Structures are given as C-alpha cells and as structure tokens.
Length: 74
Ligand SMILES: [Zn+2]
Image 1 (cartoon, rainbow, N blue to C red):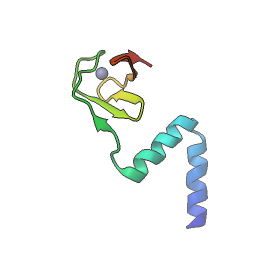
Image 2: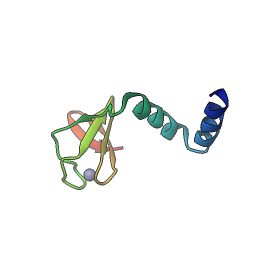
Image 3: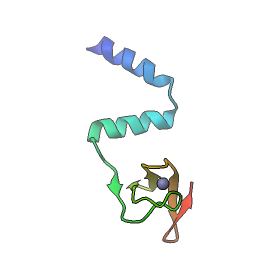
C-alpha cells in the first residue's frame, strides 16, 4: 500500500501544485463546489461553480473572482 502511494505521488509531481491541490480537494470530498445561479459572463451558461474565493465555469473553463459583488476574470 505504501509503495502504491509513492508511485501515485510521483505521477502527481509532474502536474502543477495548483492542480495537485485541486485534485486532492475533489478526490476527498467528491463534489465540493457550490453551484451559482448567476450566468457565466463569458459563455452565458448557468454553469458557474464556486469554491471559497474561486469561481469557475464548467462550460468554458474560465476562472473568476468576486470583486465588489461582480465577477471579474481571474
Ligand atoms: Zn462560461
């Protein structure tokens, strides 16, 4: 079991740190993102999800942050 885990981590090392933590978060909590009712400013689909301060669109994969109540491109 320990060996399998080492191999797994080595594979993940090739990804960026950000991807790695996103992977960990989603892996341990299944689906942790909160769906938003707002439309995506880029593709106008209701496909935004928020996790903490990060807002991401499932349809066009744009990332946003909330600034003064509005969405800004990250
Ligand atoms: Zn979008």
